[in-house]
Length: 319
Ligand code: CP
Image 1 (cartoon, rainbow, N blue to C red):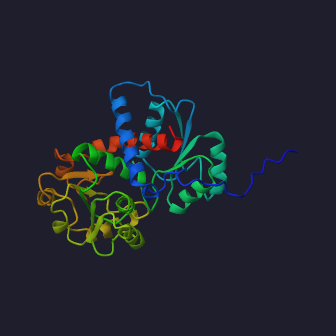
Image 2 (image 1 turned 135 degrees about the vertical axis):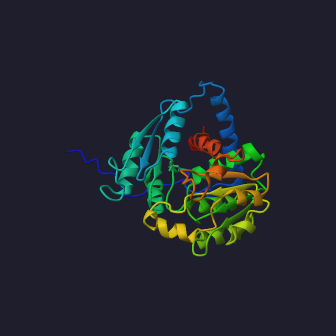
Image 3 (image 1 turned 45 degrees about the vertical axis):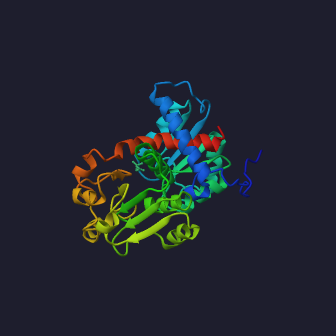
């Protein structure tokens, strides 16, 4: 009988094999990926489907948590560039429960050229990347959401003309989106303010890490009216994220005064854009009027998930 037991030693990992945190990359690489995203987007928007760099490649998409944007943008984006994407939902895979993450990593790497995973615990994506010989892309954890922030950065460049030197004010919970902004601010210089209620600040270590680079101005504010003044972007997200739904009514109380409404947008000034990673709870963290206003760029932002992710995968493949 032939044994097919794999070695338990983790394969060697090159620094940039995976896309797990934006701060793993330098500014030049981030900007190069964003530039590539614009080029590939323009080609796709022109109707030209001749660029097929993912032809013959397959993407395994692990979803331990629900998603609309992440699933559809990865699957469609990979398909449009010639590849094939496979969806694995919670009924197909239970990393760390039915099967060890290191086994999942090596089995899927035998079938696929790249893995994207939305997992809950951040350690799971680190383990997946450690044990998978193929590139791993982080599609959201309880700590960060790097592909979302790459799409956000692309959207800012398209609408404001730049990312560097802008003022981004996030209003709400200091969650995984905020951590991603802080990690981006560790690499690209801009002014980032997180306006949140006391007790809902982002992870202190991540704030310190971003501040220690000295690259960006980083502030935590408890006064959204003051924080938004002069902003280029006001950014919001749901007040109760993954694993916090049971606290939703308590959070609604604590976040009073942190809704992005027309009055807050007016305080920011006429040049301020509204952004949100979606899904949004209209009437809770943002009013219907703000999301529907001409300076709301939430839908181009959602579309850019696909283009930013395609460029990230092209970069990881060295294409
Ligand atoms: N913004 C985002 O990640 O959306 P989904 O949860 O729909 O993937």
